[in-house]
Amino acid sequence: MNIILLGFMGAGKTAVGRKLSLRLGYRFLDTDHLIEEEQQKQIKEIFAESGEAHFRSLETECIKGLQGVQNTVISTGGGIITTEGNLGILKGIGTTIFLRADFEVIKDRVFRNDKRPLLQTENPLETMKALYEKRLPLYEQADLIIDTGHQKVQQVISKIIRAL
Ligand code: S3P
Image (tube, rainbow, N blue to C red):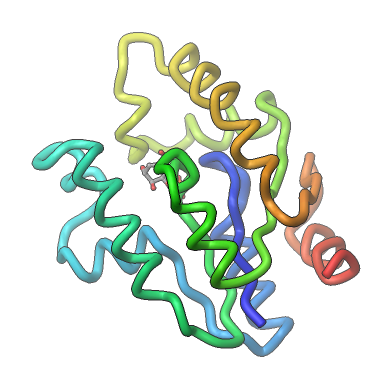
């Protein structure tokens, strides 16, 4: 079985994914890290040098390359569901789980980190809110929805395990 974590930037996909994989004895993969390793560049450099559309095509290539993995938890970049066809590919790989968190909760986490290239705009908060609202219905197509709120990583993991 494979588990695929979806959700907005700051939803905790990487932290939850890593610990969930340890708890299940699964391998852990993160699409952003796989792309960075393969390209030998940071995500923000890929955006700056080649633009978002190029990054999105790398993301699709990356998940196509994951078809066939076993017993793996895969954490994904927040925008992966915006490319048509990606959700179908991910559902073919494993159980997709949307880690849902309120905007107010993730806002503070996201702004503690300056690496998010999509938020380098004049009004990052407005940009983030617009992206969040546009993406919500896409994330909601996941197989399972887990509310994370202010919960600790271990609590989120227990919820996921109960829901599987
Ligand atoms: C993105 C989220 C990032 C990363 C890239 C684009 C997005 O991943 O893939 O900066 O479009 O929301 P995280 O969700 O891990 O921050």
